[in-house]
Image 1 (spheres, rainbow, N blue to C red):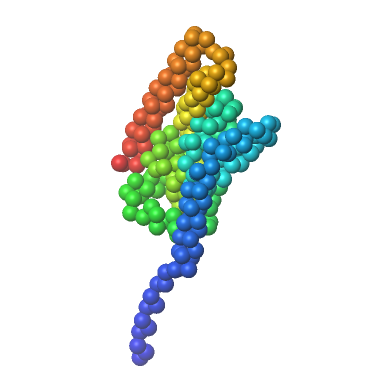
Image 2 (spheres, rainbow, N blue to C red; image 1 turned 180 degrees about the vertical axis):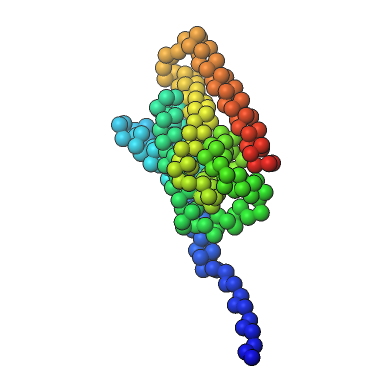
Length: 237
């Protein structure tokens, strides 16, 4: 009778993990370096004329993939393009960048992302809930993210959510995007007025602008609170 064969120990894919960690470290480093040049990028985009929107969208999308916080660029879009166009450009760029990050996590850097979020009870609850209702959960996360935006894009790449549902759920980014763009536009108007660039707004217009800003803030906060409650109910946390 032959002796039983000892079970072969499971070998961890150390090479893939090392490559994934190196890629993630490179992305973080690129993001930190790029973040210093956002004001320069803003001035450059303003001088490009009709090509400005395209360059802004592509630059914003790359920044999302590179872990550069998008808030500064979102504020800048309001100052450069105004509220309506700024919101549109940021939304398109955020969809492109977040989808690219999602696909990188799902197909290229899975091991490194798993290591980063390992043991996080929030992600575990989200992963369970996504298995049952992926589109709804990702939409709620976009309305009230419990992860930082740039990390959430990568983290969701490890879940079972379908790509099409992930992209559609990006609509949930609109309230927050509108608020930041509005704030950026307001800041740009104040700076221009303080610098004497153009006194195009009278007291009544400034009052109306302020009311609009407060209304946008109130609606965003209200929607966020509703989404947070729904998310707690859906994930059991």
